[in-house]
Amino acid sequence: MQQKQNKMGVMSIPKLLLTMAIPLMLSLLVQSLYNIVDSIYVSRISEKALTATSLAYPVQILMIALGVGTAVGINALLSRLLGQKKLDEVTKGAATGLVLAALSSLLFIVVGLFFADAIANAMTGDAETAAMCADYLRIVTLFCTGSFLETMIQRFLQASGKTGLSMVSLIVGAGTNIILDPIFIFTFGMGIRGAAIATVIGQWLGAAAALLLNTLRNPEVKISFKGFRPEKNTVAAIYKVGFPTIIMQAMGSVMNFGMNALLGAGTAVAFFGAYFRLQSFLFMPMNGLGQACLPIIGYNYGAKNPDRIRETVKTALKWGIILGFLFSALFMALPGPLLSLFNASEEMLSLGVPAIRIICVTFALASVTMILGLCASGLGNGTINMIGTTIRQVVLLLPCFALLKTILGLQYAWFAMWIAEISAMLFAVISTHREIYRKLNERRK
Image (cartoon, rainbow, N blue to C red; front, side, top):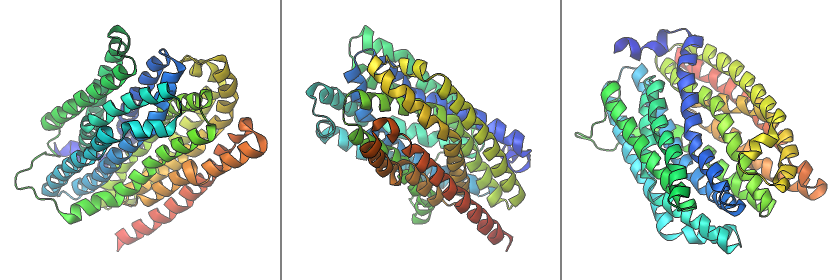
């Protein structure tokens, strides 16, 4: 047990990063299949159904933001405590994380009970699309506790270096969703409701698998509520990293709302929904690489190993840039076939193919921003990640897109992505370099 716990402090960085990142990459790819598979099957119902899920997606991003943000805070806290050998504090932190996950889900249960119809009607004037959007939203919010618990318990496994077990729990959840989607949507004739039901069943089974694996195979992070009382210091430590991550993740929702408003309605919204899911799917390996850095850096920061922190950052950046170029090449070469996964019409292909070829040039830049932000989070600073994401998804993207669309037309508005990504990358490079220098100098004193 001790040897496994200490691998983040003794294994060579390239090997350690590879062994931790690959399961995380696969885990995140599998996790993103929830929305990809839903959208592919839903597009077979109609373009309006695909538009409905695209309109619902910003609310789902908010759920992911709160769940992942809190879990990232737990990951950073637990990995540092493990590095410091404070196992009793690890147990308290895990219990606090589960309580926070359950409380977070209550917010969206309220949304599902009282606001699903209002949200759907506010996003579209088409009655049929609004009705489908509300049906989908209501189900995924009312039963969202499974998603929050699944996300949280997976971070318990990741914090102790057991990323492979985290991957297994995600495969259980996503695999269930993939199997049940066509059954509920088409065999049972439930349409868009069936897609939502398949998703929440997968999330609950994924949570059960994560809990079982953590109980049986992760003695470093015990789940116990014996004598538990929430402590302000623990919650503060979680959200010191977690809150900026929540804001960062929520920017995806703000960006989707803003882009949907700027694009208008119909095919343009359906295209962007399809593209965003494809982009999110292929960005997962880069995100997984960054998330693998988080516990490694947190552990070695707690154990006072600055050289391993620097090597982790350099190695992850090199690999992330390579991944970014590979994904750019894929999108540049195959935009039509990728959109055809969503049963794209000729109008969608005409709009989407040139747009994708403009946007995909920026993937390597986005990779640098994401990885450096997560490296800074491993040192306990989630603000850099938050600001970098805000720049690339909202602060510069939306106004630049609106300006270019007004002046040059929609076909050139996609160059706003270039402006936003270059600016965010420059911010991340400068800010993370300063943070690493400051934290490691403090650690020497």
